[in-house]
Image (cartoon, chains in turn orange, yellow):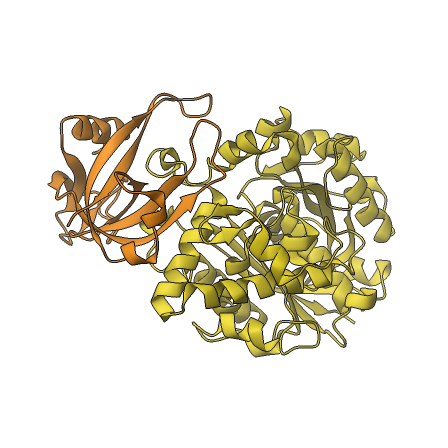
Length: 134
Length: 390
């Protein structure tokens, strides 16, 4: 069966203002980031759906020794969507000193940014972004 | 299935090897293992070579075939296996399966890496290929970053003040450097203090430089043989009595980073196969790529209850002479971490511990030992249980 939600389609969704994921027609569970089968039950029978862009921070770090092509300090976090899936992204619009234990459990809105490609990336990249909401 | 043994082991010193390639390093470790087994290269029937990013670091692919030629193997099957830091443990598992099946009697397994060949920013980018390349890597997440997120989740889950957890993490580093100071093959052979840890640069909050293993070069190898062959080669054959291997996806597909799911599956498989419990393990070499990783692994392997690992290290339970000595070699933290060589180097230490050949860092009377090797975003984990075969 053809791959339902490829990275290309996922990226086009973000560029159109939508965070896309998959909803399983068998177990009704959500899958994101996209993969071939449902992350809950393994079914291929899923439909592309628009996800909420609302998350809650689970854990985080601020990276000072960064890979080639990135600038420190680089805050990275993992957020749980209200639909269930977890996503990795960069904290934005925040002083890196404020990216500390206090942000665990805080609500964020999810966006994205374009990252130029390099010799290992097979094209341009995108990274999700997390912004604290009041 | 036939019983499977390790006849001999070899390992280079770990460190910065600016004057040797990874194939040259593997040649040294492999011949040391073959000579220690009282065999000749022509006796080896297959090679399994663990290597993670040697193609990107040194521009060499088809590495296992070149390695086989390097040490004069007779055109035997040579296979490279890649599972990031767990690569050479996967090599040992594959060697085990071929010998256990009866297809071969003598197989060489090992690994090599020259991680210092690339400058740190490029090496960090190369390692950034371990998380998912589309959905995680582009955030700039690094290996220290992934384990930093493990540390913050651990502190939050158990309600531990971060400064208390950092003290326990520093104690892991101090213990492993103390052990490494007694290991002539360790990258770092010097003891360190709390002050050294707390004064070092912040790599990825809350991990400072001394919470991180070094970037290292090196190689290690083991000769895996059937029971009949083992008895003819050595008076101290070490039996592989159990192993486990498991996989998982990137961090966004996992939930509890304090108890990686792949370790749970892998270690249960290994204990079940060996018919042993965690309480029966006398010594363990586990994956302390970062100090928090050791604390989490001691819980995941069942040596301590979840949430007690940080206190166990403060109690001294993981010291040589403690309840369960962890990383007497110095671990990845002090011994060094040439990625593809690490699993085989853990087996090297356990074999020598069971043979009571470890001098000042010997765990007295060790009869059963275990390895734990973790690759990528806690995505590839291998456990091997070894036992005196005499």
